[in-house]
Amino acid sequence: LRVIGVTDFSAPSTVVLQPREVTFSGEGLETGDSVFFVASTSEKCTPSDGLGGEQFVTIPPGGSNGSVTFTFARGTGQLGYQLCYRFQSLGLTRRYTGRTIDVFAITSPGVSISVIFEPTFISFGGPGVAEGDQAF
Image (cartoon, rainbow, N blue to C red; front, side, top):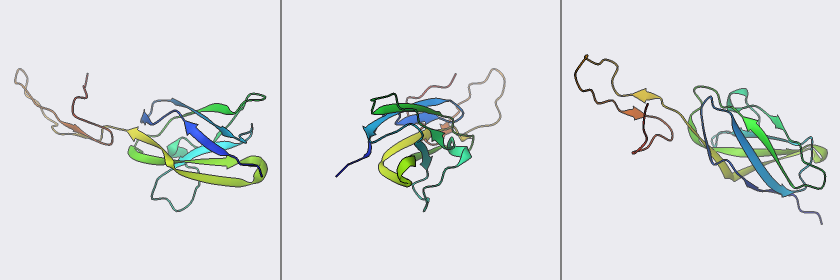
């Protein structure tokens, strides 16, 4: 019996439009396999260009881990995208519901007009925006 699968990956979060390297490890991972993310509400494990597309894996000889780089498109800010891994040689795609990535994005400034020399309070919202974050 040969047990294969992704056991860990390194990128619990990223920001829209910022390239993010994702490293992962496991058993039975091979060069030519691919990895991608899907929304938790998606019924199928199908790659999407907006979610960084399908990235092909290179595993060093004798290795059990690899890395790929994803860039999530504008409008894809959401928490909990799920990892899908395609074992190319087996023709098998596995969805890992417990392996997720959060894609942070600013989607709502709370004010759109400011008066010169007057203090203005601006609030921001969006996936991953939290108290204590800073805007520059």
